[in-house]
Image (tube, rainbow, N blue to C red; front, side, top):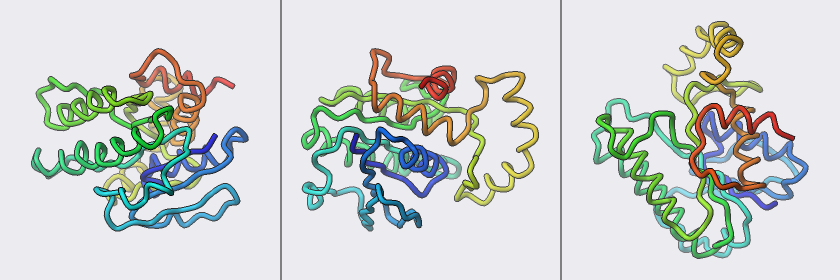
Length: 220
């Protein structure tokens, strides 16, 4: 399976990248982003671009892939709805629409969030929900992954300073929470494996919640 990965430098994207590099069913990974992942591997090539809102000039590089793991995303904290929509809905569709034309048989796996709801009262819920709906309407197999609490593993760290501090403090708590409420927490490696399971096998269920993520991560 040839895999496109967008957002390979973020916490979720790093987990997806490591899972892809470890998976014997993945033959190639093209990581696309504004910065290098900083990793070197025989399967991995990179396409570093300052502008991801227009990928038309990269069509030749982006064609011929079986799956896309889309892990780009930002926190909505302190953002207006218009600004958050631009970096969430607009950016995602700017990538997904040309990919649907270039790779109509592709499985597109989008990292959304637990609680996403296009009719929700909270701004990020509405924007993420609108993004999910737009992706599901495109002519490829779209899958929406909705993680909640994610525990970083494999030395992965969040790019957000506040989140790094919180994860350091909360690591023992999260480990305990996973033991008593396994579907309240997932990990970066489990999330990566779940995304690849969907990319490899597909399925009728197009929106996957925390219980689905953890179940898929355990399946061979």
